[in-house]
Amino acid sequence: MVVGGATLLATGRVFGIFELFVLGAGAAGLLAVGAVTVLRRQVDLDATRSVHPARIHVGADSRVELCVTNQAHRASPVVAVRDTLALVPPPGDGNAGTRAIGRRQARFLVAPLAAGGQDRASYRLPAEHRGIFAVGPLRAEVNDAFGLWSKVTTIAPAIELTVYPAVETLVSAVHTQGDDPTSGAPRPATVGPTGEDLYGLRPYEVGDDLRRVHWPSTARTGELVVRQLELPWQGRATVLLDVRTTAHTDTTLEAAVSAAASILAAAWGEGALVRLTTTDGTDSGFAAGHTHFDAVMEHLAVVGPGRADGLDAVVGGLHRAGNGGSLTVITTAAAHDSDLDLMAGLHGRFATPTIVVVDGAAGPAAPARQPMGTTIVRVRAGTTLAPAWNRIFAAPLRASSWQ
Image (cartoon, rainbow, N blue to C red; front, side, top):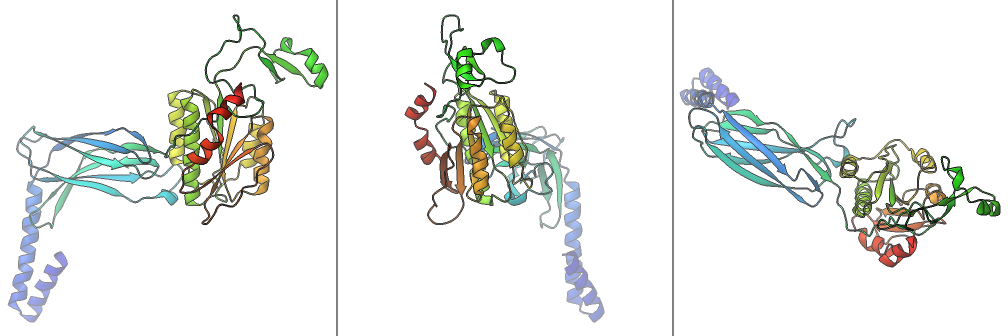
């Protein structure tokens, strides 16, 4: 309007066309009237806002509740309120990477409010992508009658919405096949009245009490063997997530992260100690509390492809004493055979390792090579893990693995 009005004024004056000069003057008048109208509309609004729930999984919905209050001494004009939703880039990432979804907004009108009056509104936020999102800031916008001018005021700061990966209902793999004394039982158990009865024998580890060495078995095997005097009931579950850029596409990464979240959720639901490790060096350690589980899920919400290839270092760390229980490795069909063999070598420290192979290729799934001492679960990106996983870890198999 400014450029058009100036052009009309200049053209009308140069060529002496009075009608063009009048149109240009009219455009300038509209601009002046609109500016004065917007400046005179004083907006003194305050808003409170909450998100329920503030942590959800992909596929669920969250609800934003708003309460707008007019703090001015006179009625407020009609105000357009706009709330935005944007993905917060992970730390160290200048942008949202391959999972950027753009900026979305919710926009609605607030009718005139009397002095001290309030109005409430709500809207639904569907969770379609994992990540940490900034909801807001909430802005109020006043426009003139011609839509030429607007004045925007922030009336509420931004708040966060955390979207965890999608979680499927899986059978827990805490109690797997294999000889692992730390795999645990499904519930607390007492072996004897005193709790000092012999439960079993296991290899000696640094720090074990030498008074518990079982000398007959040590003499027979040639290696130190100690007595385990009580039955562990709280199992341990470790998930190793391969996030190397050389192994993933955007599709396979999302499927792998969802698989990791589902497996950890199933183990945590049974009261097991859960642990997440990734090839970029992240290690959550073992714990079972709500705070620990939420921290693991929050990391899975923002994890992206890692440039560093730390597979050798991570596997070496899992070989050290103090590890045990069930182990699930999640990788893709792009992993080399040497990588699978390296992961399979962990069966000496854990019970039978499970390797979930995510295949992102089109067409029928190729048969997966199965390293000795492992269980292979193959799933195609875009499909569900539950059918293949639950078929392997059925209840009879789980029971036979710990009895």
